[in-house]
Length: 70
Image 1 (cartoon, rainbow, N blue to C red):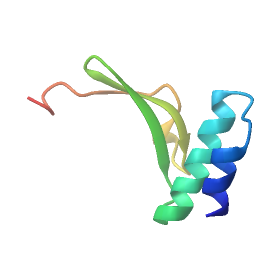
Image 2 (image 1 turned 90 degrees about the horizontal axis):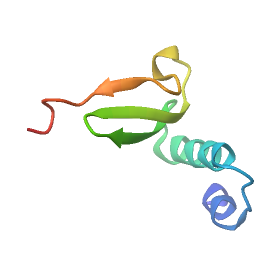
Image 3 (image 1 turned 120 degrees about the vertical axis):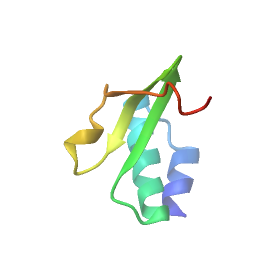
Image 4 (image 1 turned 30 degrees about the horizontal axis):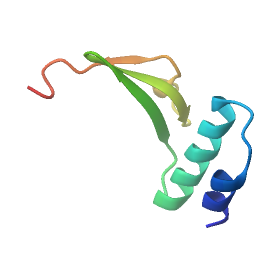
């Protein structure tokens, strides 16, 4: 709950700082080591921020979504 309160009340200076707080809170709440914030651009899913021990989820990595929603 402290993490959610911080996200709601803290004045983040940039998106990277906000994303880092969201990822930390999400991983703690859901008990995971990996969290991802992404954006769908047409048929691509682009990673905008990630908290992970795996290089696979690097910021900027793109995944083709073609065929997954048709």
